[in-house]
Amino acid sequence: MSSPELVEGRIEIVADYFRSGFDTDKKSILPYSTAARKFYKMADTIIQTTNLTKNFKKTHAVEELDLTVNSGELFGLVGPDGAGKTTTLRLLAGLLSLSDGQATVLGHNLRKESEAIKREIGYMAQQFSLYAELSVLENLQFFAEIYDVPKAEIAQRTESLLEFARLTEFKDRRADQLSGGMQKKLALACTLIHEPKLLLLDEPTTGVDPVSRREFWDILTNLHLNETTIIVSTPYMDEADRCSRVGLMYAGKLVVCDSPRKIRETLHGEMIEFLTDEWKEAKTLVEGLPGVFEAQTYGEALHLLVDNGAKRLKQVTKTLSKNGIKFRGARVAPIRMEEAFISLIQQLENEDVNI
Ligand SMILES: Nc1ncnc2c1ncn2[C@@H]1O[C@H](COP(=O)(O)OP(=O)(O)OP(=O)(O)O)[C@@H](O)[C@H]1O
Ligand SMILES: [Mg+2]
Image 1: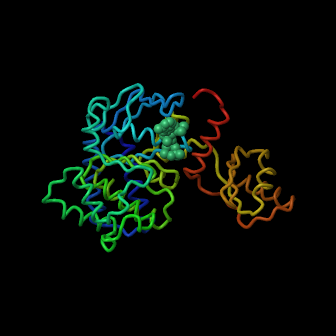
Image 2: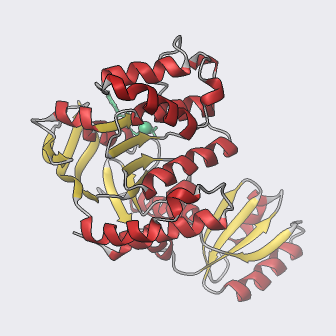
Image 3: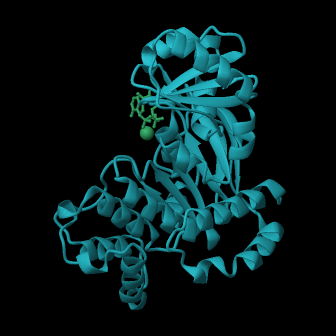
């Protein structure tokens, strides 16, 4: 089952990679066209769930989830706190029993073959999952043993993973003495030691500084380009934007599942942006103006979804000035995943129906 959209997603990632001026590892980019051609032919189903459900007593953590993930996808899972992202990943990792439904992961039945799944995938938990008192190198060696990596290969794999994660010079440092970003990179390296075809990563960059976050995504992009299938949950919309597809979870359900471009396109209209310290007052003032569909604030930025960017920019500017609101910048801005995501969540909250 191949899908042009998935390939498109990968192309977008490569384009983004170049645009962002990353320290690109050319070795992994150059064979990309070959990889893309191969990918067209070989997109196997890696995950398929039907009606996947998990209840914790009265909490419906995951409800009737139908999801198909194909080989080579970089799939982003987003959603508000408590939406069911961790539970979904833990179910797929074979770490929780299903309340209902069925699923296959790497061809294994999730109900009957969870042990095989655990051996074949790489799962990175949301919480700190390293051995605090062991060094970087010892952690990698420990995971190599757990996953029965052949003894003859351990030294070479640990060395290349240390390099990959840029941790070689810290290899003798205790895990609990690493920075947050380094800990995340080490945890990822540990999940890669048995060379899994599927990675399930639960908020791997939460709380990490922007530079480390970028480095982490550098590594993920390389893995993606080398055909590892990745599902990653994230609270960061710029990260979701880098995925080939994004699933939005809300109250245990998968409510949207599409490419970032298509999700952005769900927002009809144009975005205008104002930078102001008085964003609260500004928001109240402009919310009901004609042609303003929605108002969202980000720090000191006020974003308005409007019918016509150029026209409303003038009108809103006038209204703000007339009411003595000072602002530094006003422009028509591109719509990002962040706006689309917040808008979708607001709609779901307003609907107040059993979704
Ligand atoms: N072991 C558990 N026992 C009882 N309830 C649980 C358990 N694990 C999760 N839940 C509940 O299930 C729901 C989904 O939780 P989950 O951790 O999957 O959400 P999440 O999307 O990962 O949230 P976050 O963004 O905060 O990590 C929540 O209401 C949570 O309280
Ligand atoms: Mg979670």
